[in-house]
Image 1 (cartoon, rainbow, N blue to C red):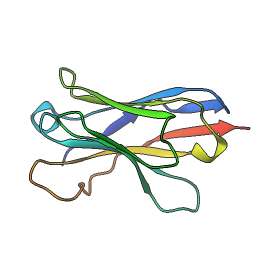
Image 2: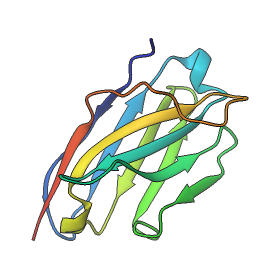
Image 3: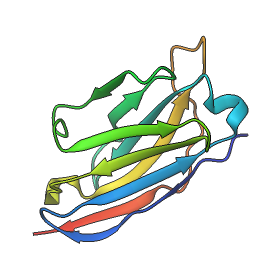
Image 4: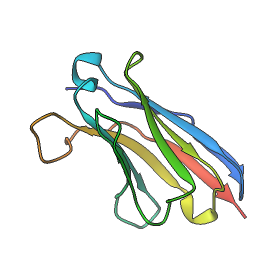
Length: 119
């Protein structure tokens, strides 16, 4: 089982910024599409953003223009830069990946990292 470890969460005021990080083994990372999900209290986990091995990105409408996903293939790490944070962004954030030749993300979930945005 691949271990997913997210970091970088915290408590921030509305309008502030945070950067999340997640690292997975390089043998998987190089060809995988990476993603960030989040789960707010009482809500289902939702897909926030993805980035392919080639750098193509997608974003949920709710974060477009505020969040930026990026990846460093030399460090096998994916980042999520979150700017202009809102209280609605409060959630546990998880990374995951979709292996090459797979149409779905894995069932592996780490502990996540808590992001709390105060108003």
